[in-house]
Length: 397
Image (cartoon, rainbow, N blue to C red; front, side, top):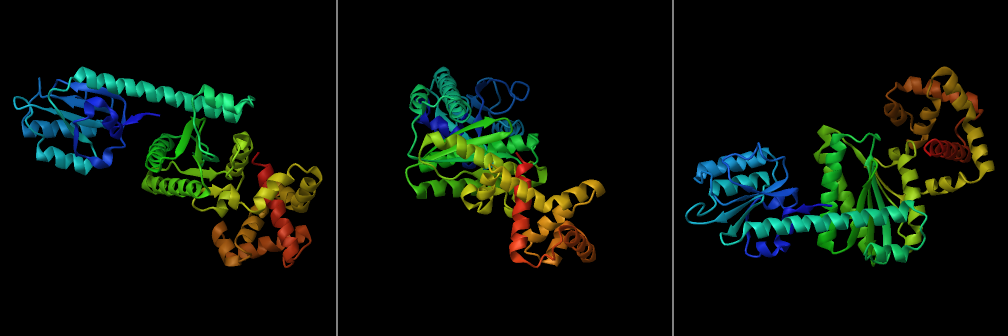
């Protein structure tokens, strides 16, 4: 967790502050408060700081303040706070406000009599409080998901966590299992958007990062509120994916079934992490968002794995294709999989495989020969497709 520009209005020193520009950037994260006393700030800052300007020690004409604002934008500061005084900065230049609006850089004005030591102290204290809460949330979720402690009430009391009565786990991870800089940026954007969803809806969403995953625990008191959270988070997820598509960093997301007892959380977490890792499952979910409750036959397949005789029977159904692919470096199993996914339409299957239709006809004839079937029996095809899905599942876990 972090604090953001919009959180500044919670502070007593910002009671009389006004936002003058850059409203769209109120979700910018603040890393530290800094009081500027030099004409340039780039050499002193890392990015993410909130900059306080009194005009003391710096040129305060319109052009100089605009140049400083542009420097703050280039350095990716979180915002600027102007303390107005007739002898230093009497007002914020309109050009600065226009630039702030264009770039989404929050610009605030505060009375001169505010003591900067109090303002910076309050920001630092809020950061410490949020960091402490973030640690508690992380430890709480890790205790629920990964520890053997079954006394959930004691865990909630220990970490001072309050939740609603219905729960849903949401897991987001990199689509290619590589945690790149682009993925990290997308995770940060998604975390910020989910935080805003929680604030606007007044529903509880706990979150933490673990390995290459973001984990959210959604809590509400009604089914409709749970669905609202899922839909809103999904919309933000798709928006962020599209916004940063040129940089890569594709993500995939899964929602668990809704549950009402926290002791079900481990099972639900396991179910959706298996779903996320199951090979080719995302071919059925082109937007990379999986809802466990909509998995249909896959929910049965996850249970079939526990029955050794059924598992062995399913694998035996497609074993000739597995063996042939292994010996000839071919992809007959993938061909049959996509043939079924595309409802046995030859043209669509050939397009999905990027092959000529005649090549597909040859592969299908070879598949029929190896499996001793003509692929015209609906029940036999269903059995084969289920066998392939179970095979995919077994190779994902």
